Amino acid sequence: MAYNFIIQPEALGDLDEILEWYNRGSAKTGARFLNEFYRHSDLLCQTPRMCRKSFFQFRKWPLKIFPYYIVYTIDDVGKRFVVFAVWHKKRGYFELKERLRSG
Image (cartoon, rainbow, N blue to C red; front, side, top):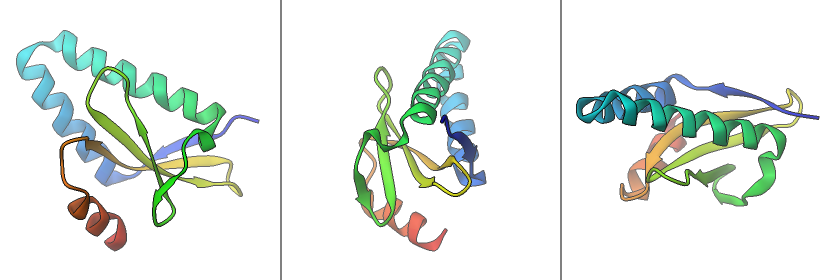
């Protein structure tokens, strides 16, 4: 059974910032990023346990073309995965862990 996905407000903020940055260069690049994000989210809806837990209960799934991770948890009761962050691969994990710990 496929899972649904929920995007938390902070992750929506991440997406807004990323799209704003890519759209400054080209609206096509922003659209490509968003398409890749949703394509990988659809894949995670089918098989949310494709990657192991990285820290706490969170998992991170790398986008293929763009240098970002989808950081999420799995809610088996609600049959959904919950996106908490869209995180650049070169950003520090300390900041991410602090954000996830407080959220």
